[in-house]
Every structure is written in C-alpha cells, then in structure tokens.
Amino acid sequence: MMQKTGSEEPEYGTIQQRMSTGIFEYTDPKGRKPVAYTKVMKKHKISKEDVMEEAGKFNITVNEGHFVAPVDCVKRGRPKSEKEEKPKGAKGRPKKEKKVISVEDGECEDLFATLVANAFKEEDGAEAAVHESAKKEREDKLASVSASVAAAKKEAERLEKEAKRLAKEEEKEAKRLAAEASKKEKEEKAAAEKAEKAAKKEAEKEAKEAEKEAKRLAAEAAKKEKESKSAKKAAADEDEEEEPDVVKKIEFEGKKYLKSKKSGICYDYSEYVTNGEQVVIGKWNNNTNKIEFEASEEEVEEEYE
Image (cartoon, rainbow, N blue to C red; front, side):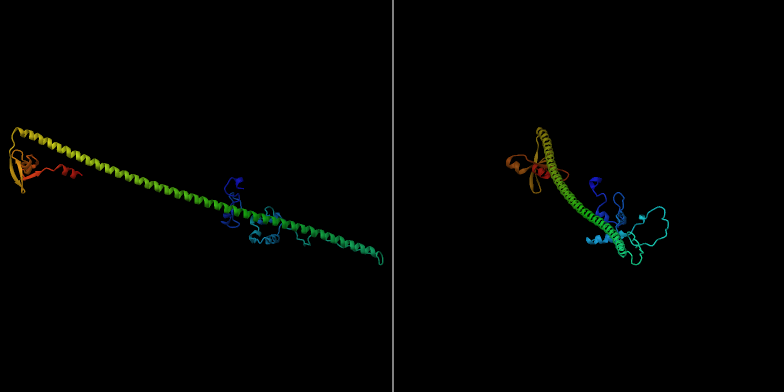
C-alpha cells in the first residue's frame, strides 16, 4: 500500500496516529474518516446479535459505539409518507388456510382423510422450506461477519507489525546519527587541541628566535660602540703622540692609579709597574672628582644577556 501511494506511511495512517485521537475522530492523511460499522452491518444484512456472537468466538469485545448510527447516516430526501401500520404476522410464507370439506354423512370418509393429510403435508413442507431458507441466510450472515472480523484482526496484526518495524528502524537510525555526532565532536575536539598545540609551539619558537635576534643585535651594538670608543681613543692617542702625555700617580678609594694631566684618562698602576702596559680603566671627572670606570666586554655581554 505504501508503494502504491509513494509514501513512507500506510495509505490509511499508522496505529499510533489512530490511537492518538478518539475512536470515532480519526482522519487519515487524505482527510477521510472511518466508515461507520452500522453501514457495514446494513450492507451485509448483519444484526448486532450476529456480530456479538461471532466476536465471542474470538474473545473480542466490540465497543457499543459501533452499533450507534451516526447522524450523517440518516438518509436524505423526502420523508416517507406515513402509512397505516398493519399488524405484522409471522415471518415466512403465509400459512394456507385449512380447507373445510363438507361431505355427507357416511360418504367418502377415506377421501376426506386423504385430503386433510395432504393439506397438512403441504403446509409442513412450506414451513420447512422457509425455515431452511432463513437458516441458510443466517449462516451466510455469520460467515460474512466471521470473515469481516478475521480480516480486521489480520489487518490490525499487520499494522502492529509494521509499526514495530518502523519504530525499530527509527531507533536504529537515531542511534546511528548519535554515534556519528559523537564521532564528529571527538574529531573536532582533537583537531582543535592539535591546532592549539601547534600554535603554542610555533609562538614559543618565534619568541625564542626573537629573543636570540635581540641578543645578537644588542651584542653587535655593544661591539660597534666599543669599536667606536676604541677608534676615538686611537685617534686621541694619535693626537697625543705628537705631544708627550704626562701622567701622575693618584690614589682613589685606597687604590693607586695613573692619571693623564692632559686628557684625564686613568691607567691601572699595578699593570704599568709590573708589565709596563698602559691599561685604561676609566677617566677622571673633574666635576665629581671621581674616576668613571669603563665597563669590561664581559660585563657588557652579561648586561645584554
């Protein structure tokens, strides 16, 4: 039926849809309402007693509402003309009135007895035929009701089986989607963590390279500054070579030094006396009356590191 309509649901709806509304309020996907069972009974000439008897064979309880004819089941058109009701007699062919045969006394007694016997025989045969016809009609009705109940029961079982199958498929699909969502979430989380670690590692690497470059530039700057000082000093020494420099021994903070009278440059006294080398240790500041010591190369490098 679903292949015929091209839909995923049965043509007349599912059991769940029927159970979600009142027993007489259901409407199928096409807007059709259930046919009243009283119409079915009327079509097949089935009485309430026939239905109850057949349902009892299968232990089925029939809702009393099925035996109430809906308002729209009333026939439309002109109302029937009222006719004088005639007293109803017994069903079946009307009985033949017994013929009264007059015979003279003593005449045809055997004939009278024969006619009476034949009349009763004909009457009994007619009643038997009527009874047999009614019995057959009743059996046909019961058979029709039984077939209708059996078909309804079979259809209900089929619908219930179909509903269970669909519910199982929906549950399976829901589990599959949940598993896919969980897998995707884990993959996204792992990718995010990996990207974060890579970014952190790259940032640390760049920071180390930047720090290393800063140290290199600082060392180069210190080296250039030292070279500049040395060049200035060399130029000053060259100028001083033209005129002899006179130094005198001074004592500062309990230590002896040699100070140039001309430039104020101070030399290490012990190095000069011991090795004869003029090791510059700083310059005399006339404003503060102190020696401004020069920082050694190791101290400069340590400062920048």
